[in-house]
Amino acid sequence: TEMQKTLANWKSQNVKGLKVDFWEDDSQTMMKKYDLLLQVASEQKLMLDFQSSTKPSGLRRTWPHLLTSEAVLGNAYYGKSQAVISAKHNINSAIMRNVLGPTDYCPVDFADKNGRILYGTTWAHQLALSVVFESGIQHINDAPNNLAYNIAADFLKKLPAAWDDVRCLEAEPEEYYTIARKKEEEWFVASLTGESRNTEINLSFLTPGKTYSAYIYKDGTCPSEILFEYRDNLTSSDKITLSLATNGGAALILSTSAFHAKTTCDKYEAEATGNIIPFGVSLKTDQDSLCSNKQYLSSIGKGRSLTFRNIRVPQSGSYAVTFYYMAEENRYAYVKVNRKDESWREYTFMGTGTESGSALGIKTILLDLQANIDNIIEFGNYNDYAPALDRISILISGSGGTGIKEIKDNNSAEIYSIEDRIVIERETYTSYKIYNTIGQLLISGEFNGGKELISIPGEGIYIVRIEADNTNYSKKIIVK
Image 1 (cartoon, helix red, strand yellow):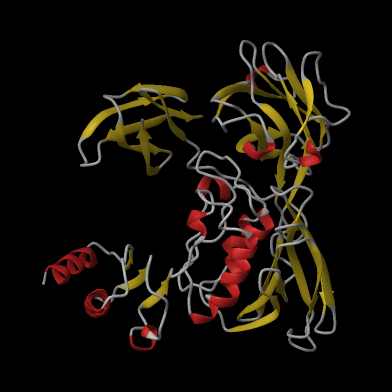
Image 2: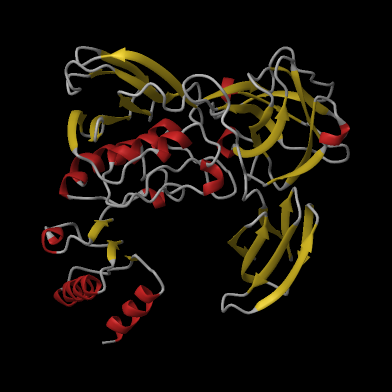
């Protein structure tokens, strides 16, 4: 059949599995299509993931290559319908859908692909979803750029795809849900809540006689902040009490190892005493109460800069500095470190729609900071307005409690469109090729770092391929 030929062709190209969407109904004809695809995929030894599908009903007993299925209003709709994909929806789905079988919920969504933060639940709640929902293959919903330098990156790297044991610790529809999952000798615990509450996690499920360390990722002081906490010398007789925010959550690893990464983020408020804030820069209250400390600075730029002072790091090196900002449209700002002119560089901050906490965005920049001094970071624009700024955070990543993990950004090109041009930003030499959707090469070129603006034929979908530093990757760009 045509299906057999197609799947055999994909198998010959080293395809391992298929994610098949748009199963339109539960009719007998559609059910036969399920059976046919399961049979043919089995012959080719291809794994399957069903999207927009009927609820699980035991098919995996016959067809174990069916890893997971959606069969739920999943997190892919989170940014589109936050009123529907709410904390209550997640709690109810965990209680009702999760018990039927693996759920491709597409958990963890901090921001959209341009960095605009998504609200409805806290970041800690979103992280917890990765443990709450079992799935034979876990598809994280967020864009890679939003995850690479997030405080939770180390947690996600350790996340198993399959589990050895599971315990529901507490559950109440529309109110809260806490679950523990085991992989080998480690337990992953996740908790969700609608209303703010304290949850007490009884560790009686741990192996008696063993000592554990807890790596805890919990709600911060605003929805877009995750705090890390480390606790050691825990046993099965202990309890952990956590404070969960409204629509919040927590995720933690309980391990017999005390040497997993202990990652923290140092936060510096834009309006903090000690910063240099020139006349004309305005302190504003965030009416949405979503900014950290519920305040931010506006009217930066036009020759006025904001200077963060007293920034301390444990070792000299390159650090991921994340700017939490707001901008009605695309804006630009320079960043200078320790008043060194050679560190000066202008960056693009994608528009978030408005100047409000509900339109807070993130952009991460790698900056060289020095140990044993009070570092200075200057942020501004000489000619135009820069984005409004809530805060910055600096990722401090260590193993065993000491040392800095070197941060490498091999894919540090930013690719986006402005009107009839594609823009590529990268610090070092880069070559590029731009294709249309049928694979025709339209434009190729190279530049020695900085910002490259490339005129394109018109509206449409383009594939931009980057080749640099022995790496290559592609990104789809939609030009409207």
